[in-house]
Length: 115
Image (cartoon, rainbow, N blue to C red; front, side, top):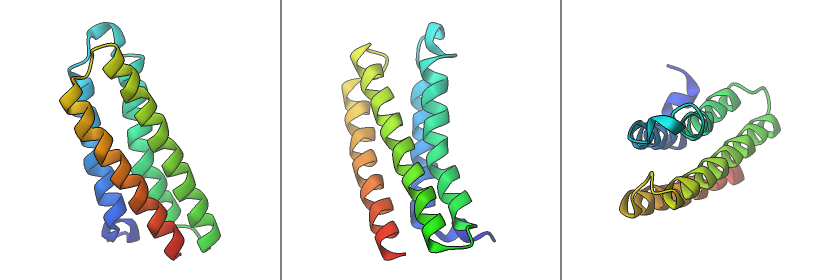
């Protein structure tokens, strides 16, 4: 088993990305290769940076990857806000994923502080 597989933040990030993928599957065809694709990429980048950072040779380097992960989360939230504004994402689904975003960023920051 790889180190990142035991990290709760990585597990949460995978679940988060999976939800973003599900939401974006419902977006109109006209934005599947733009907004939907960008949201999928940025949400997947959260867990990927956690995984990549877990293989770092130093805590400082791992913290850098956690920072990238947080930035990818912010990017995802920004895109989700636009999706909500364009009515591609219902308010209730947005509220749910927004709350998960806030929790995930808090957990990543807390983990980073413990390194």
